[in-house]
Length: 328
Image 1 (cartoon, rainbow, N blue to C red):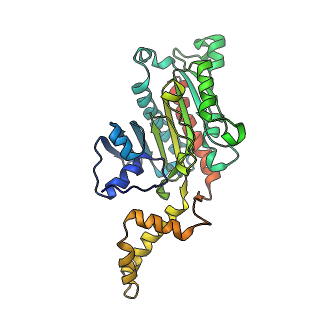
Image 2: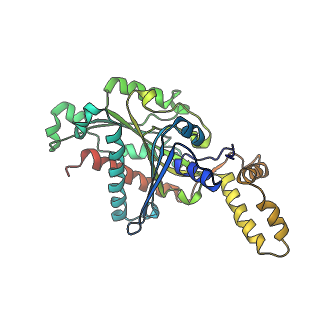
Image 3: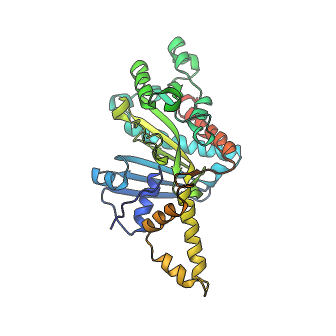
């Protein structure tokens, strides 16, 4: 039986893993994995094909590509360039799938709007704005002087915007982007945002790319208007990196380790057996009650998040620059 409880995560991969841990097969959801051991990269494709699958997963119908690599957290420029190249290939994969057929003939000359979602004053939420800061924007040059001013046969028109958050502007990010799309008429929107993960080992080591757009704040319980094709009028590719994890999740994972330790202790084995009999839902709810009210609803982030967010923002922006403004 599928258990109905909330796990704080924006990653489709983690939603699929939750069902697999319960030995439940979801109809209408396809999972494919590939691993490059030499480059230490693991790519997972979660395809939600039906509305029933979407309902079970709590995610819209579409394709979710998840790139996992420990090298994302390593301060090595060569490693990050390799990650950027792989990200660029995967972003192109989803763009080619989603742009209108008549525009595929000129996919190298797209007009692209990159949206840096989040709050640059809150470091774990500043990924989107930092990515926008590092982009090579070209729309103004191409419109003024033509694509050959860029020194390339094909030149995409890239523009970028950082709409801020509702507390700063009084407006939904989707409302702002909808107005910009109506005015500038891009072929596609790429929205970059920080995400929440279920597994702390994925923090700052995972990138999710989805053709379903993005829902700002959903992973931390702040449900803002979604930014997708239906809401803004053009295809939206969402790019996100998990930077925070629910405090209750960390305590729940610690409980799992404690249970395993108790099972090896003669004096505590009985307590361990009792806790082991709880299912995942019961453990999670039990932990939430134990840590309430002071830690319930708190989200945690690594202590080196400042360095990580700046580093990863360069990698993602380089992937986008490679895709749209590189001469190669």
